[in-house]
Amino acid sequence: MKALVYNGPCDVQVKDMPDARIEKPTDVLVRITTTNICGSDLHM
Image 1 (cartoon, rainbow, N blue to C red):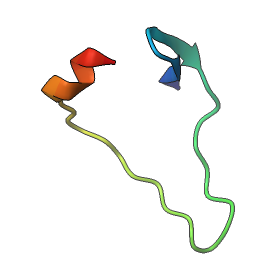
Image 2: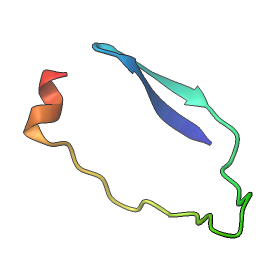
Image 3: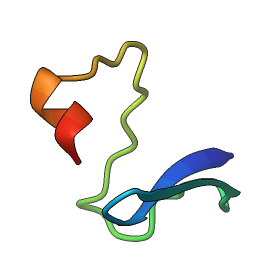
Image 4: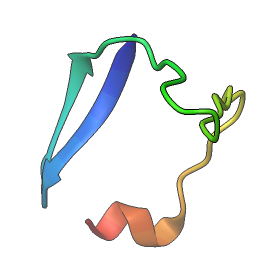
């Protein structure tokens, strides 16, 4: 899957990452269907 990776201020990259998987009985997978950008995120 593709993931947006935050490396530091003004440094983000889109990378191919392995698919998430359940490893422990307490793990869950969450499907994100909608996102939003907060105004304070624009200052990063």
